[in-house]
Amino acid sequence: MSRYRRHLGFGCFALLWFGSLLTAPSTGLAEDWPFPRGDVHASGASPTVLPDSLKVTWEFKADEAVEVTPVVSGDRVVVGDVMGTLYALDRKNGKEVWRHAYDTGFLASPVIAGDKVICGDIDGNVYALSLLDGTEAWKQSTDGEISGSAAVYEGHVLVASQDGKLYCYELETGKPVWTYQADDQIRCSPTIAGDVTLLGGCDAKLHGVDLKSGEAAGDQLPLDGPTGSTPAVRNDFAIVPVMDGVVYGFDWKKKATLWKYEDVDQSQEYRSSAAVNDSVAVVSSQRKNIDALDLKTGKRLWRYTLRRRADASPVIAGDDVWVPATDGRLVRLSIKDGSEKWVYEIRGGFVSGVAIAGEQLFVADDEGVVRCFQ
Image 1 (cartoon, one colour):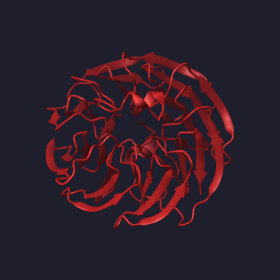
Image 2 (cartoon, rainbow, N blue to C red):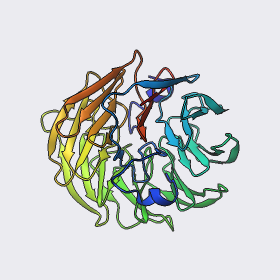
Image 3 (cartoon, helix red, strand yellow):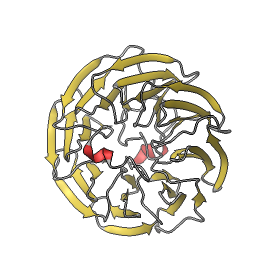
Image 4 (cartoon, rainbow, N blue to C red):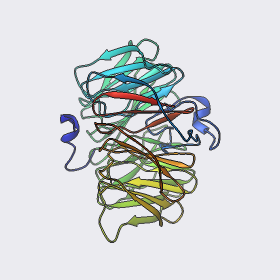
């Protein structure tokens, strides 16, 4: 575990591709993965079904450990390491196209928005770089660590900071537009849901913020405890796990709690985000359990127990659930019953999540190796 990640162990733990991705269909092949949770809704889900047998087609070695999810757009793969270097790789062969080194580290994944890469660092800085050559287009600063990735909406960048604020900037220029103030730290990414963005906070509230004005969109919804998890949205549902062991299912349009899931036999702790499709929400706990919940009722459908915990959030791809674990196992499960279908194992550990684009899977490990499977 890196020295940057270690300090998040106590207390409250610790997006837009234009046009069609705002209304991405639920079927078909998703060629890109420009956000760490796949889309602006942070669903962590793709319609893509990967081949039964996957092989490593290329590897790239970063200078330091990588704890963020790679993002993919066109012929580029972008990733950042814990010591502050961003890398753009050729999607076909993994060769380095450019790098940009900063004097800090990245715990939040970059996002790709059109011709720009947006990323925030542990010192609270926000950068916009050219996807083509890595030149810096603009820089802004917040007063707290940035633990969650940016969101992008209609030419605006949204960035949440541990200073308790959500910042909105113009995508092209970085000019400040508005700022929203929560009651405590924000460690998640903003999630786009209609004309609002959803934020889970360390103040034990689910915030809805109007994307145009930056004002609160109605009353905040109460949570049983603090959360650093990014809300996962599918249709009218928003799924939010909290650290105290509860997973909430909300109707974000009606601002109503639909259900709460809690393991009555053994309390779970959730530090990652859910993956959701049209019928199932999949969550990963610090007690090594992967649980599939009925999206409408919150009833547990199945459970798979890992050898060690997964710090990365699970991803749904077609009929599969993908889980990279800290013991170095990349596990492929059946979404139907949780049965194990395929495992790939390394000597290190996986902290970052997977990116699934086209018929490729990308994942990085804590030794700085980025792998492409196909």
